Image (cartoon, rainbow over all chains, first blue to last red; front, side, top):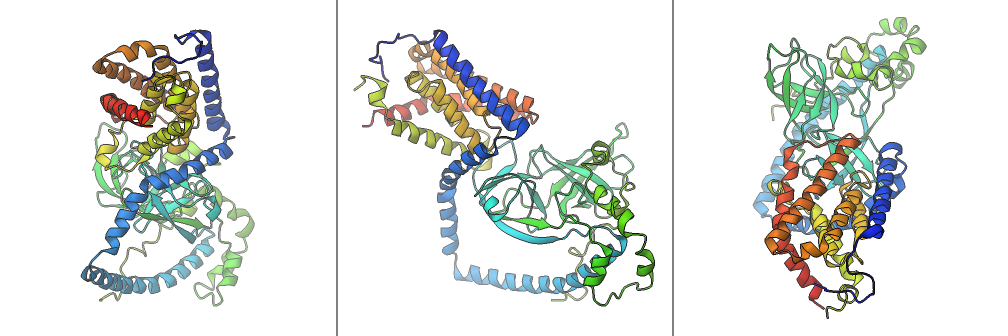
Length: 361
Length: 161
């Protein structure tokens, strides 16, 4: 190590100069934090730093990715053939499901239009690859290789083939950060698919565990129940699977149930995810009726119901769908399926889970 | 050869070492090892502060901290503040620490790393997203245990001309 610098300044550091520098730098850092935390003024700086960091982050995981892709390319022919057979049979089953799904979707939209409730279905999706870097072991966040250049925005929902994955917390130009549903700071409004009971699923910091702490003792939840997103809050599309209930603890001394669930999405093993765009607007009955040429279902009741509907009763539906505006705290904690008629009455259609009638193959 | 830090240590090496430390902070590890990953950037800042606090003291800590904030995607300025404070203490006590035998040096580093982690913990709490998991403190003793190895590596890196 070096012994003495050859400049004439005193050997012992300290005194006012060092303390002054500490104060100035600390004040600058504190100013940055306040500006970033309170006003969100620093989006440009933050994006700049994140963009500068991205090539290094990418380079760090590149060898690992190269290794796994090399292993893939050396996979044996029999393995590939077996995989191909499996994919082909999967494809057949999925096609059969899709045939039914399309007719069900049409019917669903028609029925929703009759009831003036919103039909928020995913319209567009984008595949993003997860950059395999560890941002923080105690926070469940991941980095993806798509950013605002591809239209990614803050608060966008991310799903994978099995269920809801998380949402975008920060979108840079070429990369974005996603908070997983298992992050301790994350909460997702869910609904028990069997009964329609709504609640909030909180992350716990462990990738295989969600907790539902706001269910009253008398609510109907059993182990094995499927939790789907309820669509309240407007971030996630409704009706997508979130998790399965793994434990229900009924302690008579406690006012609330302790319910645990396991997320269905492969939070810690997905190589890629889907970012989705969905229409948050309410389907208006008129446009819907025009869009459907034959208007087969219930031709008698529709005209009778439509006239009073359009202007006045259209309003409550979007408000109920976004609890942030009217009364946030009670809406988030309540679990009785009463207050938002538009959301509760039609429990999310279980058509993706139901096997089609004729899937003998 | 040891005439002055400026001649021993070019800016290029400083930048390379810093980027290495940043990369080591986010490099993918098996999940059971993740919690034991030492804070490489804090250790690098400490080493530079002990080596040549005039050239690479507080302002270096500040810049490295800001880069780390960008890397981890946390509140901008969080690590900048904590690393500046740690660099200040290290610069103040630099002559004593450098005279210590290795084991004692590691003990001092343990205290400094603990201070760093505590400040982060505190800022997280003030900013409204606290991580109260006890496992966040695991990296501190691991970092102190790594200190002798790291100094050996850095000294090699520095003296190779």
